[in-house]
Image (tube, rainbow, N blue to C red; front, top):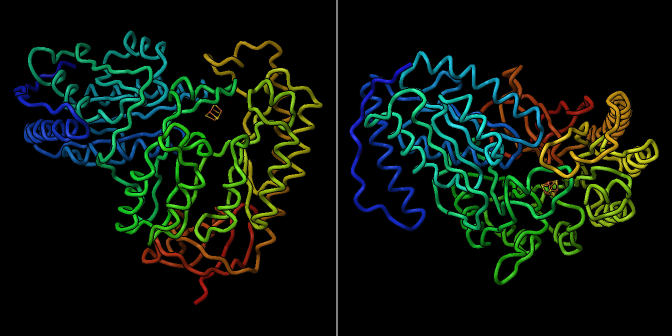
Length: 491
Ligand code: SF4
């Protein structure tokens, strides 16, 4: 539909050169535009952010929400909003198709609402073929940007508003704002963030990845590793603690290589010790840990910490040293098992979880049995099991010897069964014990129950009410239901 809404372009006299001042300047301009648009519409403009993929994307979405609220949009649960943005993931190829499908659906809303803008960001936008396809086939999209310049969102949305609603460029299909960077070494601090939870928060400690596992697209779409300064991280967490946050999740593609590009260098273990000192923070989690970089220093810090949760996610991917080599994981089956022994010796009650890919190109029955062997030896508390999916743009996609689908499916089922049996047995051990639980939500199915997590990340449901949210309470685990517990608060 032709947009017939006309705003007058605001003069930008002294745009600051430095960040984050520049973005705050643009937030003021965008705010004025949104005020005028709301006036024209006769009601506040709404937004909806849809997030696909991992914790990093979830955290990025909180940054988008922070800015959208700052400039005057009001959040809405559904996609019939005035600004809808998809924060995309491209780890699995079929995720891309899902986004294309949903764009058609959004276009239906846009046809009925001349105030509506559509934005796309995240990993998928770092792929030139995707952007080309959107330019060709989805001309109604108003704004596209990638992972490296998300900090510029205020500036980008201002440009998108101007090209959609000012001057003569407001015809459908003529107003696409695109800004994609190949890489960056820039980290901008102190922009607004709207947290999803009041009591817990993710905290980015680094961005990007240097590892180039042969099946993974992340290094291509998130760029090289860059760490935030420890003082900025500590300052952010201190502020979060002052604001009532009790649990932080330190986020990075490979947290164990945190600090390598900083001057002076600081290790992840040292950073954890700094975070441990912050008053008010009671629980510290982190992800993801690459086994090849997990140091003895880190194990020692975990052993002596009072706040680091008893949970470590340690992606295995395959138990076969031969496949691990082709995956470019840079550890062997034996090294992985040794590492697990060391961790368990230092922190006996730690819960270990993992990621496993089944059917990587060239995986034989023997290779798969090696994976099963590690699963039995480690005894994971839970595991995310994935069927290998060919990801265009990665070295593995070009490998010959792709495993037939029926073989993969059969191996996957065997693995899943083994993982579930072991996990259920491990969970049973805690039945009857009393544990500290951070209450997170009122249970969706039963409003008389609340749901929380143990330090080891297991889920517990117990009688309670909304007043308990964000509190750490002692809970007796009465019954184990395999993947979760039913408990009751003990005073
Ligand atoms: S460590 Fe490997 S799997 Fe993880 S993000 Fe980096 S390349 Fe991908």
